[in-house]
Length: 533
Image (cartoon, rainbow, N blue to C red; front, side, top):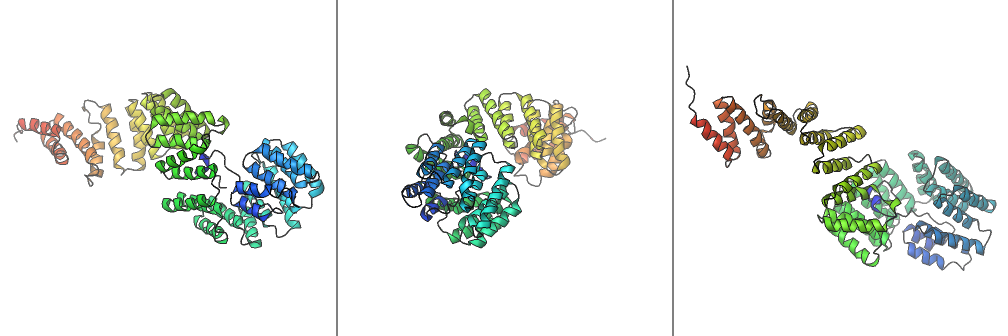
């Protein structure tokens, strides 16, 4: 699973990537690999009275564990031990359950019991390793333990491709990309048709931004197994982040068609539609799923998000508050608080909007947009000093770009701190002296510092704006009217008739219906031209 992808944040409960259940039935193993969990459960339940019942109980419990149904997982692991008290693999299963609960000491006791009889079994070693790797709170020590178990496994089975994939996963969590790739490569050398190994290579290439190699690896996974749904999912995500939205959607749709038709799969598809800004499509998908699964947290989340994006804030508020009653509060994510804040703002509840946007920033302090949203909310409430504070907080935390200087300068303008605004805009003109708009902003700040236009403080900045923007009068027409109006008025006050006429005539040329220019020119023409001496 590519946890770094943004769409995963919208999913309420993502399944860990399925491991290969070596020593279990091939049909069940393949169903898990294809993320067809209901099919896998049905298959393994049919094997519970067979000769390989112990592994079937373990496999079945593991599927439930991946479905976040811990109690059912524990039930089947215990049933496996009830059938065979010496079943090492089901002792591993109980260890997995304890790790999921955060009880590491209890988990390790189960692993020790499993190794008393299964220390020579590569599968037992591999599953203990997988338990550590997939533990929600895996430490560096845990991951190194996993690698040691996997080394023991491959010492006893040199052709254990699954163990090498798990080893790669452990190294990847240790941020050792080189060793991870070596492990994945070894898995493909052992079994070139092992789609998961190719998938992992693609995910690693994606993480290192080697997108061409990532695409090739995903396509290789599909080539060796045309029905391997996870490869279509990750390839679709890759196309999305490359901005190839049509290819992204068509590829992701193939994933949806191949994966099991469950609320989780539909949730992933709805999330993908949302990210590609197909909000109507998202809403339709969400509403269909909610007919049969009204309490699905992901779908209720996306319902609220979509209503807001479609400009339906009242429905968005109702949907968001309904969602908040259905979701475990510990599973709320930054975008939940972000959207709730925006929705509240659109529904004239500013205090609660600000409160939730602050919560979003606390959870995701590196997201610039959150600071802009919060500052804008303060500005709408005319709390301009607080808007300034938010922009400064953002710059202290994340640094400043010209965009930040623009927003901060605007906040100072609204707070009527015109000197501060000019100082801020000046940082843009210093860095980008040919950026016309920045000179316009400085002119506006200076004009407010000289409200009677006595000193002409804005004059040099409007002149520079005209110099830079005058080559594209259609694009900058509105702003050029503003600049020429100022200069026409300035020269009128100074009694410089010719310059005043020049700029007011330019206003008239740019905007033939401009009544202010007509009035000014008429007034100037009433005054006789001074005679030359």
